[in-house]
Amino acid sequence: MDQPSKTQDIVLIGGGHSHALVLREWGLNPLPGVRLTLINPGPTAPYSGMLPGFVAGHYKREELDINLVDLAEFSGANLILGAARNIDIKDQTVDVEGHAPIPYDALAIDIGITSDMPQMAGFGHHAVPAKPLGPFAAEWEMFRSETTPAHVAVIGGGIAGAELIMAMAYDLRHHNRLARATLIDNAQALTAIGASAAQKLRNQLTALGVTVLEDVEIKQILSDRIILENGREILSDFTTGAAGARAYDWLQQTGLKLHNGYVVVNENLQSSQPNIFATGDCAHLAYAPRPKAGVYAVRQSKVLYSNLRSFTSNSSMNPYNPQSDYLKLISLGGKIALAEKFNIPMSGALMWRWKDYIDQSFMDQFRELKSVR
Image (cartoon, rainbow, N blue to C red; front, side):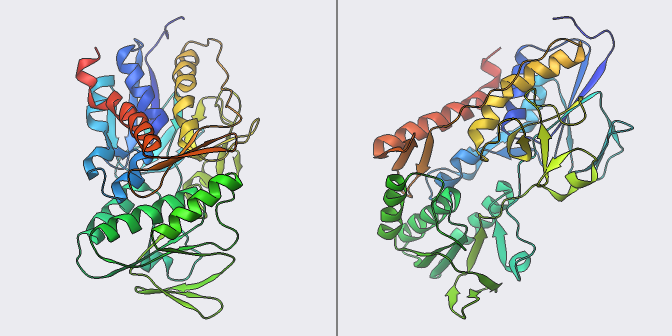
């Protein structure tokens, strides 16, 4: 591959899984003549795969975090701490809160999504979105340190919501604090997995004392309860949202082609602007739509790394071909998990050890940077 003839700036917005792996690979094989810059609101980026284990008390808070300061140093990247607010595609700059515009020749976006629900009355004041993960983890850590009886609720009956409420219930039961745990959905819960796997999850929810409310609408969230449209009130001191995940609003200002707010990309992970790439949950694979899942972000990293290098030298790019299905490993509260692929489920302690091995192996790539060179 030809090296770039002049110094070029590659800017990465967000410390998501794809970008973390790109930075690691860049540190192992840097490209002369390229300046790398990472923009992220904070110095760490949480790994989503271990969040339920943290909520359940199996992992410490710091075990979730990828240290972006160390990773930037390893890769030779300049780390800018601040939230991106816009992209000027004409001037090729990124607007970052508290900083001068950041110029780029090539740009990649990997900022994840948010599960904030601004349209729901009281959510902004009395609930915590599950994504972004960092603020959620901090709020949960404070709540779990209390000693009073706890009422918790998760809005959203998908896999993520079920994992969270099971983890919460497990931890609070372990500390003799659980008074009530509720999973709420405005439709049928657990439809993203097969019927057999869904039934196993429902059995575990029942075993942990979780009440599942389906086909109900929320009218308002208060500091200590949730009021449903039918007038029923659900006690909840800690309410979180795991439904309605959406793209960050600022992307709508960029002029990039979007699909329901997500950046539309082609098979090379390029947006409507060829020098702007996007990966992870914030991207929409227009040519092969897929659900939002971390496994895609991880596997996109190799293609993104290769194509960023190719772009700087006008070389041919590699396509990203997502798999049609993927292994789902779902935490069940305690140190047990459920695995499902092609509608075939397996559950138990062995599945937890398998999930833990995969998660720890992923994180070890960033914990042991000094030893890989």
